[in-house]
Length: 454
Image (cartoon, rainbow, N blue to C red; front, top):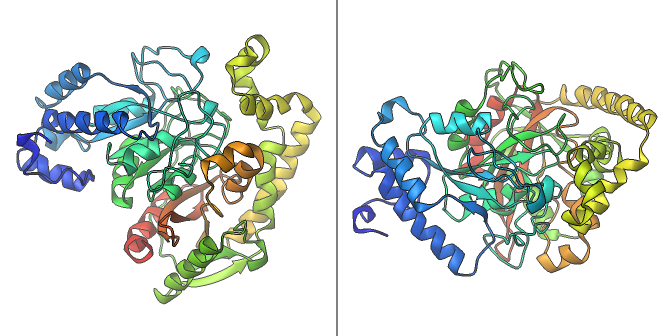
């Protein structure tokens, strides 16, 4: 830490704390110098394999010096450092999607990235991910296996592993991920973060390498719900140039009284008694706060979840890598090739049959959702050691998606929150979800409950 930054508490990179520090004399350049030291120390030590590309010290110094000439009052994210998952474009920096042969250097930044920078945020670099955002564990990258911020023997979660780690390790105030099957929620749960999975279409996907283009959502990692809301307010908005962007009018926060949970026989913890006990504890905490908790039949949600990888939606992933998988198959990691390669077995008839089946599940799920204000599940039923995940990558990854894979297929908004720790210190997380456009209700609820549940 430099002499000039010792008077500020930079172990807390929350937006409110940094705003206070700037008002007291901290400069963006001083913050960047401090972060460069921290990033270098993390890289040179027992690295968690956070980054794919870091912006140079010279680039960051020049950027912050230009920023310092602007009025902080005009910029809601003035001097706030953030990281970008490396399937989201930053102008002049390679986008790899964790596949070197896929890399290209965009001339413009993704719409959301540009909005954040226009609001004064400072990009630090591009983060590690499961290749082509296919996975929930963080081990599927040629740039290194991402390791959990609390216990490096365990997975960090994925696919947005590096993004979550930058926030958990206090290298950034917030980070962008993407979330198709849970990639913005599972890493949040495993690293004690808030993970916002916005309504699909609320944030523009322009400049994002698709996983499943019709389902993808840019996600937000932060230490608290207030920061998440601040970032969401800047990042959201209809993008007429992006076909899957939607002109969504967010509903005003509603009073939450009734919370739905899966029936007891539908809960899965895969032998993890600590996670089971922590979920039961979270329910009791909610009841103690005056919420009514109501069991529902979780069948349509679970059945919809199976369609994401066992159904024809995997063909959307194949569409992204079609040239590589046909011409340079070794460019893809074997497990990614195995998963995406299944797409060729589906016909157009299969695709329409799956769409019709999904419509039925959506109808059933909507009826259930109408009986409660929000739904609550564990974010993941358990967490795995890296070695176990590498030995059984498909089955264990499927278990990680038990509570997450249905979310975008059924068009829900969601937020993941920390909710305690196992006896060994590894974190447990829960997810609240609601209908599309109910993002503000979830963020309001999260702000009410983070101290209670954490």
